[in-house]
Length: 380
Image 1 (cartoon, rainbow, N blue to C red):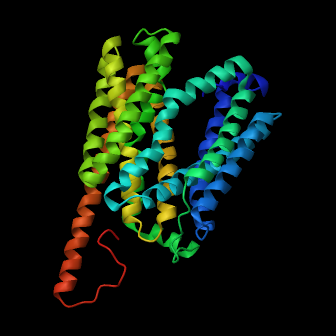
Image 2: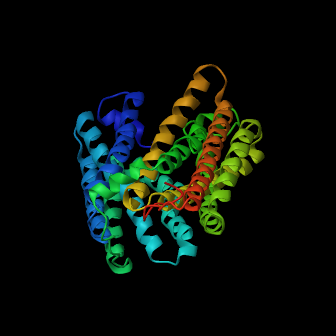
Image 3: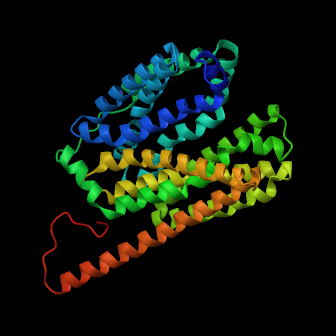
């Protein structure tokens, strides 16, 4: 996002039109995650991770070498294709390396990269882009892909794919209502954070009275909150997964709403931004929840989580923008975010009632002497 002005100038489009470069990446994530998960269902997971890094490398080098707006749009789309699949498969590999009681924390460590990017990666890419041009920033990410592959070779063990995994078995996961409900919780419940984040710079400068030079500090504090929340969220999810998701959605509803009030005070704004960042704890918890309810469709479920979060990005940014356009003010994005988190809570309540209803139905069938199909679960 911070590179958009230079990209727009180089490709001779307006900055609003250049926003399509961000959208192209997001579309790549949404399309690539399920497509790759199904097509590569039988691949060894470490090999698949290398292939996804190679695809990202092609996308970022293509972005750096793009000669017009069309070629840059295509390159950004390619760059987004491996995103969801990489984080999803990496989560599966991490979870396979630890005991059952530590799986959510292992997923949290993988997601820590997303949180740390807001503290280190965004300022670093912005600095490179300002001093060396936006193409140099994309080349730097491409080099990062190479270093990631080297580290993966030495430090990530080979994890066998489920012998029963196939494109057909992965697609079977889409028949599970609990999978769709969990994806809906991610798409709606996390959208609040994007409603605020998408318009955070003008909100801080126009309402809180920050200078543009102070905005990176505020974003870094938000990022530190994300790192802390990510680590705590994995631990909480291992202790009590469903109550943790309820608690995190409620946390987001409270502090996103509080942002609309606190933004008039700079000291309070710093505090609330850190607490909003803690809401990132929802990410590893929902990833663990999806893997739990997906049955044999583990790869598809793990990757679809990132498609859902990109949908939440679009939902939050759109609704936040509508609130601003209707004259409600920059700070209104906090109320929008709170409403979306409450919507996620409602979906989580529905999910819980469905589990209880299924358990009662299963219990009745057992009492009547019916045979329950092997492999079925109460979360189906």
